[in-house]
Length: 223
Image (cartoon, rainbow, N blue to C red; front, side):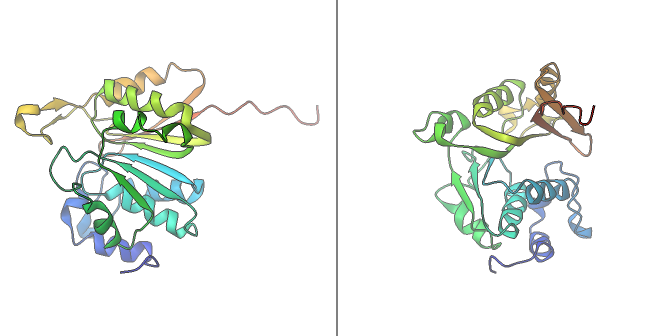
């Protein structure tokens, strides 16, 4: 595989790994249907992010699509992928680079850390983020921590996406003894009360919510 792989070639390669087609993005691997993945890819092509930050991914569905978009945008961007690999060993011990490269995606830097650890790192304040995808621990508290930590680092026009924003499932991804309920939606409801933010829901599958700073009103012209 190479970095010149087309989106549709990538989709066909992804279809060989059924685990990539789980976790509530509305996908269908038998029909090669990306569901919300089309939206993620399209947004990244349109925004042309210099830096995308992706927090959490089961098997890399979102990082692969955003990475493909960045490389289709003349490779003028990169992804910071944050996942401590608490669910299983999939992202441990430097495996992420080889995994993503096997799909022709080479613009991803994986940090096997929690969001809290990344926020406390020496280079955090230098980050300027154009695209933020929050898909880690789906609790109101964790979403608040992540969004409020990254909000000052968001570039003008940046978009943040919250996955599982229309989900209240009981998740056992960390084991039955650590079962928890998705409450991302509660923090999304809180964000609707912020006059400086725009909040838009796509209630498809387990849902994704787009959040962006509200632009300045246009001044009347010719009056």
